Structure formats: structure tokens, C-alpha cells
Image 1: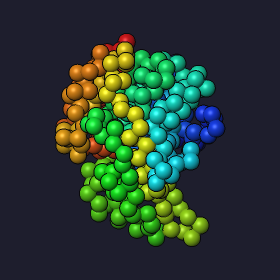
Image 2: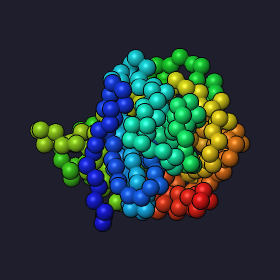
Image 3: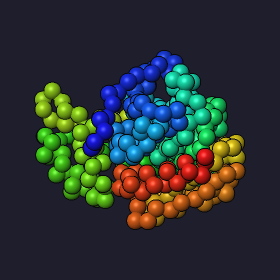
Length: 286
């Protein structure tokens, strides 16, 4: 891998400790915010291309606050507020924010509602659901994403068993090999009995999805004044659910980019494409 992955640090965001990775570097600052159920280590193949020219932070958003999926989960509004407290506490000023899926949506809310002043924003496959969804009351079994995630497989006998499982599932078949190895190492934790379980449990992942119902992001898009690039996978599973072109049209300085032969999980499938996209975007900012 070349560059070492730093140890996890903790930052108090007001009644909770938010874990994060920090890569020390230059004065330009970048924050990478991951998707629901995933983890900051998976950004490493992308982050290492931006260090040491930039200083980089990647928070780990999973079970850092109490979150019960049956009681509405962990609100994305709370995550967004925590993200802004995180930036203030660590003196992260004028960062570029790169968010994927949930990470894209909470970055949007944090800038629009909680005062993060960003120099730019890259939204990779943001979760902007149809507006009617945000006024609905919903429970886990009726939530299109939480209902699936709470049933996720969460036990493997050992690393070989886990690796065979990952290799057998269509979800992971298009992943970059390096990212898949990072997922095996950091996305699963060895238990005392020697078996493996998911680092972000199915319960916690479902709680994240449930929390995405709280804030309608559509009215917030017009409040964002920095340049925004919205990135969509050509073969995304969210086609028909997330109207990315509408989002681009509502942003004051919105641009659109499609990534060929990629689905929803573009950073895991095509990390080098994401590196190029970010580098091109930074060139336009300067």
C-alpha cells in the first residue's frame, strides 16, 4: 500500500466521541465522509494520492452515539451537526468535502444548516430521496434500505471464510482488489472466539438508514454557495430513486459527472477514477 494508515483518533463532538483517521500534510484540507455501513479505511487508496500536499480527515460514522433502529435510528441531522462541531474543534477551515452516499447527504446538510464553510463539495451518489418520502412515518420493515441491511450476514468462521463470502457476493464482485482487502481487514472484526463480525453491525447500519428520513435535503441545495460536483455511477442501483440531475439544477454552482461501468459504490469499485475526478475538481477551484 505504500503509505501507512494512521491510527484511529477520537474527537469530542458534544456528548459523544467521534472516531476519525487523520493524515497530516499541507495547509489545504480535505474531509472524506463514507457511506452507511462502511468505514473510513476504505478511502485509503484515494486519500494516499492527496497526502502530503493536503491534510486529510476521515470520520468513522457508525455507533459513536446511541442509535436504536427501532426508535428512528441516528438522525442524519445530528450527524451533520456533529460534523460541523468536529471541524470547529479541529480547526478545519475552508475544507474540500468529499462525501459518498450518506456521507454526501450529511455533508450537504452540514454546509447548508450548520455553518461549515467549504471551498468545494463533491457529492458521490448522494441519497436525496423523492421529497414525499421525508414526510412519511416509516418503520424498519418498510424502509427500502434498512429492511435489507438489518438482515445482513454477520458471522464468518475465519478470514478465509470471510474472503470466500466476499468473493461470492455480487455486491463485492466489482470492487477494486485493494479496497476489498481493506474491507476484510477493517470492515470485519475478530471476536474472542476467533470468528469475525462486521465492524458496523447490521443493527447500527439499519439505524443509520432510518436516520436518513429526518431532513429533507432538497430545500437546502440552494443555500450552498461553493462549487459542487455531483458524481453518479452509470449503472447505479439508485436510478429512478435519486434524481441527480434535479439536484444539479437546484445547486447554484452545480456540475455533473457520470462514471462509466460503476454502480452506487463508485469509491470501492473505481478508486482511481475518484482520484482523477477530485484532482480535476481541485484544479478548477484554484
